[in-house]
Image (cartoon, rainbow, N blue to C red; front, top):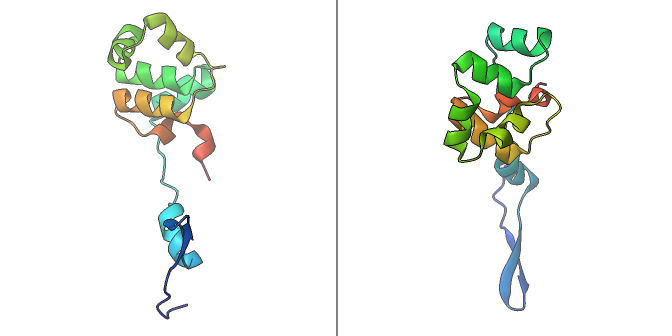
Length: 115
């Protein structure tokens, strides 16, 4: 589909509410290529062999204490300690905040991002 296509605008009560665009154009806005995710071997060892959560493994790798990370996140140390537990199921927004403190990508706190 190389021919220019006009977008269709659908009005609701006289106000633009929806736009119909070619599917290929839609994909450009919605589908992002998977980023390659890398882990230092120390993080892998702490997670896979020692059973630590990825959050805890990264903190140890970066040399950060729970108090330091909690302070930067503006939460209490006990609240942050719960986030480090291997059984913890963190939201993407929480992973994004923690990864910003650690200087890593949110994907590096999520094993399910692997292809």
